[in-house]
Length: 190
Length: 418
Image 1 (cartoon, rainbow over the protein chains, first blue to last red):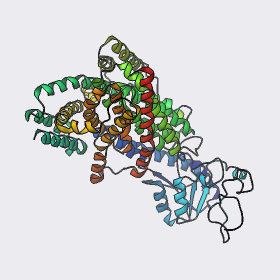
Image 2 (cartoon, rainbow over the protein chains, first blue to last red; image 1 turned 135 degrees about the horizontal axis):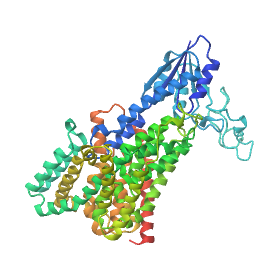
Image 3 (cartoon, rainbow over the protein chains, first blue to last red; image 1 turned 180 degrees about the vertical axis):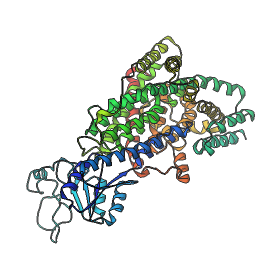
């Protein structure tokens, strides 16, 4: 079985810990890091915007691309060290969420961390990138909290049950439920 | 005839500067074009000489600031900035962003936007990576602040140097009037970036891959810091004494250069390269070509849309127009075109032009639509950012920063007096 662990700055230790604790002993673990083009591209754009200074050797975009590759290598080394068992590593470049989904095509499990608001349970705990991966992953997904998960008390009460209930937890799947949280007090059916 | 030829030449000069055929310097097209506008009589030799005399001190000032920034880099000033950024920020990306804002705003204001783009951005990226923080918000902060935090001092941006010479304002008065707009623009950028990148600034491991302690040796570059502080003081003294503050910049650069040369840390050739002589020639030549064009019709056309006076609405209109022109071509030609029109209306209008030309470029990745379109055609660089995201961020920051900074300018003019 192949387990892909998506290594992202800031949240990676939780993913590595999950892989260590939960991946079967015979699983092949791949640590994957994706370097986005945005920082290098933005720096390059800013340099290009300085009309007349065209000296390509001073382009910070190039420097950032080199630094980015080096830092990804170091991050993967640190992750492999924390995992403490044989594993493979892979570096990709591009839009992180797309690259991760592409890499997970033949995987048996993808481990990733929530990258949004980590102070309470809820849909905002997924940022745009992890939301995309969870929605599009072609394989089973193990979604972990980067730190200790917030208490279930962080879920707001269902609408109507409290004075300020304005947001409902996602409704359980199945017939008879509204597909979206209701934002009005319950009354007779429309 | 002279009108269309000089306009065509300006287009050719700008096109060359954007495309840089064979990697040749921008001056290769600009200098012959400047010769041509004089030879064809599109600008009289007397007017050309007057323009050159106006631009000469500006270019000298620019060269001194460029050399100063490069020598500060050689002295380890930017490594020091990296170490300061990292202190206490491991696992705390929001705190890191706040520090990046402080450093990038100060470096841009004092050592110009070139220093922030070329010298500081890589340091910020490396620091973020070392701390295990996602680099995106911090790098975007640098690229945005290079423009919007370049309002404070005449040395912060070449556009400011040009406007400073045209406005006749004293150095201290320029800084006094622009302090509030500078802070206002930075505040807008901070609020928007904090919100825009909230998920990148969330969820952090306690530490990155490496211990932040081994960021490398970064002794305090006392000498460089002292020279920069003395140069700033020199600006004030020179301005009070009625001397061109370019001399203070030149003195600061000279002190650092002599020390670096004596210690064999640099060579005369390298120092000359840091001054960017082809760049200086380009600015001079571009100034002449633009003068020929504005003398031949463009000025009349623009004068009709440029609001006069220094009411709040007029200032907002001026800033918006300047931002639009800067986004179409680039802020350097934009400021050259607009300054002669705004200068007769007084310093308020000139400073409003600067707010537009300095903040405006954040709207388009790579500073102007012309560059952007060319880059789309060429696809020369394989690491393009997500243009959609970049533009969304620009739309969130630029109009708000333009308005807030212009209102701040208007307030400063009322408090300090226009």
